[in-house]
Length: 421
Image 1 (cartoon, rainbow, N blue to C red):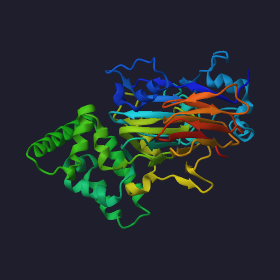
Image 2: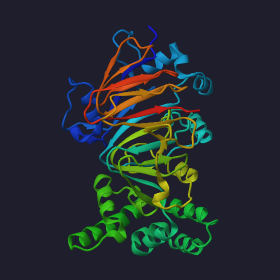
Image 3: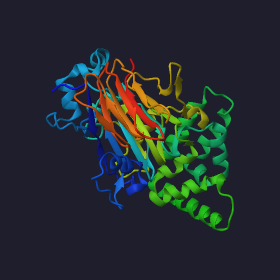
Image 4: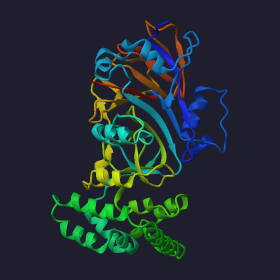
């Protein structure tokens, strides 16, 4: 049976850094889509994968279709992707759609471009499992905290002055060079590289000793009621409690601390240093699992590759926030359209007064996630009507429109991942 429209069951990843039980947006969504699912209070619900990646291939839930994964379906019916996407991405769904619920920091990391991804995969396939690049975008569902990109130089210089332990790890020569280069934007990235690389390559005993001294000092200052913002004290203590003795704790003096409000986004291109710290988000990325890590993680770290690959261009936190663009032809639609061809995310906000809404056909396949509200979905080419509620995931083939008959008194909120070439 060939159907252009069917529900999916995403794959839950229970990584240790995820929020526990119903504190997790992932848990709330999967419980909303399946009332029989049992959510365990002490179990982390970190990620929900909605796509065709080998590590988390979504299952088709329609019982009239022989049990298949989404990747098997696409292999059987590649035309469902749309001709442009099928030809451009060799018959593969080019994006992976996720929900993340982050309780503790999710590693200091960056993602390689295509050229470096292919090189790393050839050399170390056990650590870099595919050849694809991995640009990604996080859209906040709740207030969402992360580190992203290098701070403006004056902020880094401020921490070098107020945090002597950080100054020790960067080194006097590199710190002095950064001060001299502050007025010459063209030289700043090279000097930042030198500073960051020197710190990341410190001997373990040196940085552990310095971190312990810093944590002791900040703890005592906080207990005495002193302002510890000059040492970024609250975040330092939080990270150290989860990753004691980890060099990544010092990265907070180099990287911007970004707080997204619901609906705001961060786009993370190739070589952009980042870490997720806390909160729930929608995430969309190129279909890849290539991550170069160098701290705040028990996983494989590759300090030399990370230091070599990073983009050392400083910018303020505001430059990292990615806002959606309203669709002039549809007041319900807001477009998160990053500067890569692999994916776009469409937020669809249907007001309560709208009882029928058309999900417009696109010339590419899409995956729809309902985060609020209820509706009956119908399509001229579908096998039957489908009930959609909170947590429902729907695969929509290229060039297929879907009519939603809304059932919720509070309207609907949905996110649709697609590839608009």
